[in-house]
Image (cartoon, rainbow, N blue to C red; front, top):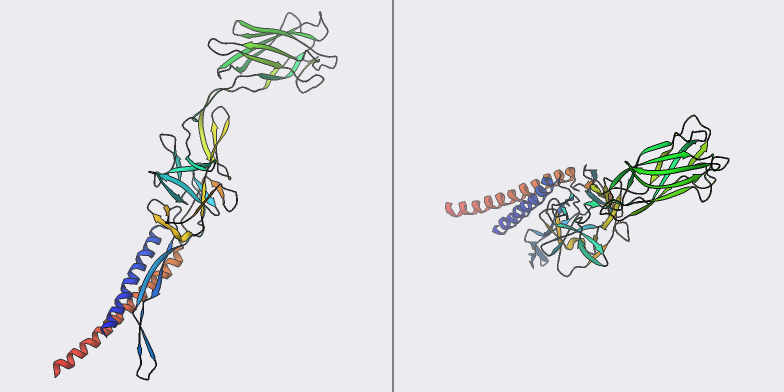
Length: 399
């Protein structure tokens, strides 16, 4: 009967451990990227002996707790409000590096730290990119600003009044162009009807304030569209300390009505349609596309594609060991497969979202009840065995 007490104790110990596992699952129900676990029970060794009738009698030794098993089912993907957060929709783990150690995680709460490195919020580990077969930290140290680009071509549209007097030049003011360093310049055009000298001719003068930067001539056909060889004028923008930039002022393709036309009209309304320069810009937002590429947006309207997230896959998920901070480390002699989102066996990236815990509360509460009943039953075995031993002692005392 004493062995029954020890058997009951194994049940108490086993279900106590199970309660710890269930409690850890429930406590992390709102932890992004958390993977729930199960305690695996097994029966202990058996003692074999010959029974009274000559048959074999196998007596068990109680409950054993062999290991915990991680459950890697996909958690719900939910919007986080942070564009830098990522959730992996499918297979794969983010690859993180900290203090020379490579770690893995499904928790995609990410942000750039003060040094410009992309880090996981829970652990501070740096997020890795895969390039050229090797891992390196994702950073934006040299990408916080976008260099400016000088204007090389400015295209115009609108109408020139073919009946405008030569003594009243058409003014096109407030034209914003950029020098080679991305500096902004407000240019003005003066267009003078020169048709009395040459049919369809308009003389151009380019000014910045009171400074004349260049001049030229446009000519238009009888249908009002620009003529070949006279549809654009080039001038040089050369502010102090900046490399000179040649800028083409384009009035449209010859014979095309999509640019500037010289026709009889109530008034002239020439305007800048587009130009290809831009100023220096500062970083305004960063996010990832579904294939894991970092996308950076700047205040000057430019976008830059940066590093690509690395993902890891494993031949044996149960070889992963959970660590604090929503991290996993690889067990000894285990193989890792590295790749990119959207390729081979890897899932895609959902930006601005996080993967929630995969804990099923209804399942955990059911397990909690079962574990509680098992604990109660084991304690009852101990109590009953104790009562039986006490009865034996009472018999001895009465003698």
